[in-house]
Image (cartoon, rainbow, N blue to C red; front, top):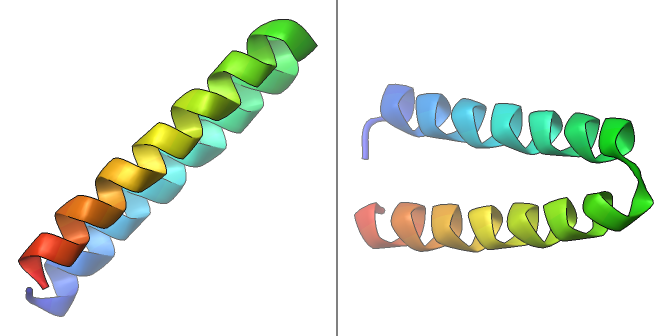
Amino acid sequence: MPPARFALILGLVITAAAATVALAAWVGPVAGGASMGGLLLAALVARAVLGRRA
C-alpha cells in the first residue's frame, strides 16, 4: 500500500474516532458506552482492512 493512501486511511480512522469520543461526551454516559462499542468495532474493521491490503 502506498504511504499516502495509508496516511489517508489512518487520518480518516483517527478523525472518526475523535468524532465518536466527542459525541459520546456530549450525549452522556449511557449512550457514550454504546458509542465506545461502536468505536471498538470501527477500529477492528479498520485493522482488518489495513492488514489485508498491506
